[in-house]
Image (cartoon, rainbow, N blue to C red; front, side, top):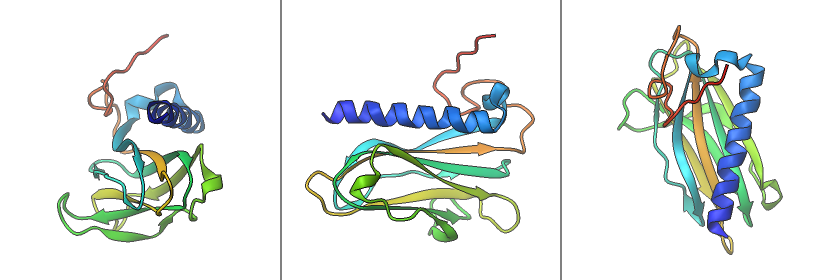
Length: 166
């Protein structure tokens, strides 16, 4: 069941990225957008999900996509920022989704922030799951865009592989 839910989370996240790409006129999505997996598919109960940061240097917009699979409890998600990757991260005012309930499963949630102005370089999501019977299946990615003319290849775009068909 866990493997099936993780595959569902990955599929939901992929669909969300495609939809975002359409909004961004995505014929060249991955030449100007970098994806950073900040929370691999996992089942979490009663605590904070394991996450990593995204280095936004050179980009002017960031979108955190959170895919929520099966859940039997509430969860909260927000974005934090820091000047250094290993420093103390602080909340970004307004960068939080409304608390997700057990009825909010099998959906994708997004938080978008501008990286201009006084925004700090490193972003890290905080995903906190309540104490349920099983918990919540979650997966997250930050899409970084703007500021780069072209990333040209899969590695620069933050992808394991990029297949293009013309």
